[in-house]
Length: 281
Image (cartoon, rainbow, N blue to C red):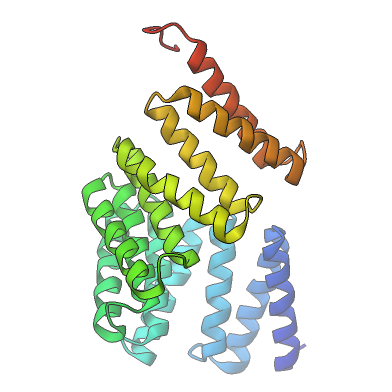
């Protein structure tokens, strides 16, 4: 039971349970693996810290947020003390803690920590490193949760521009960054700007990934939502009809994405037939 290969095998099994949503079973194993690794290897061993991180992620998935935070705060303190404040593993631990803070509604704590992580990653890894870009995206998400839309959009604009410059216009990460920026524009009512980006993203994804790829269908659905917000109902409905038909053909009639597409089409059709000036209650 105490052999390190046995612990590794059990940790791998727990990860497999976690990936398929069997979180309770994953937690049962991970609690024991974390305790065993601490007893055998010591509290400061890297494998012990990794086991505690995995347990925290499962707690988070199970909605046991306060327990996840307790572990992650200790992991941050341990990694900072053992590895140093600027070690990549320390920065990752702080970023994970910030995300959990955000999920727990501690948005201001999340922003403060993510600003530190973003600054540290830019200073230690460089402004163009992918981890720096990821830190900016996480900070933008926290800003949006706090209602600081201008700060969030400024970061997402920077990420989109950086990815296009570094990776090229057709790289999938560039398209994702532009799609995320468009969503933020849409959420604050900058619909025309959202549409300009979404039309290009939809065309690019179809050209690069194919008309039936899930990301292409998502891009079309997002574009349809922006058309709808802009009052361009005939274009929105035509696009949603296509998305719903494609999802049903590719994913099946009962797939959640198909049901979501049908619901969006029904809502748009109802809006299009509602008399002008009439409002839903």
